[in-house]
View (tube, rainbow, N blue to C red):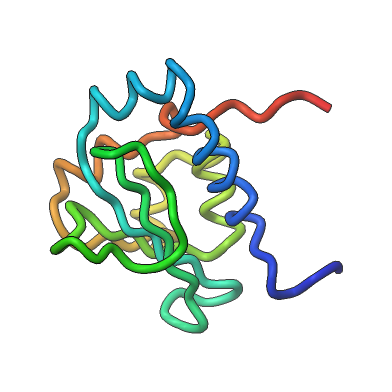
Length: 124
């Protein structure tokens, strides 16, 4: 199964970090201007979560909780579900309704966190 401590979400967030340095990424930062904290659990929400901050004010993605106050919204996902939502394979509303995604904070901020903000994976 490969390395169990490397989440699939982590490589996706690395791509996003690079994407935010591009012109397209800078447009996203300008348009959204919010900070998200994403808690990713390998198997079950709330257990062994790895925390990432997606700062769409500064255009940064980093591992660890947001330190400058409170994030606008915090999401909790299982690793597989985060990947599905990020790649547009699962609708975020459906994920929320099914309990595959939990949200804390501003719902209006949460609705701006859509698959459009992720770079499209390059076809192999």
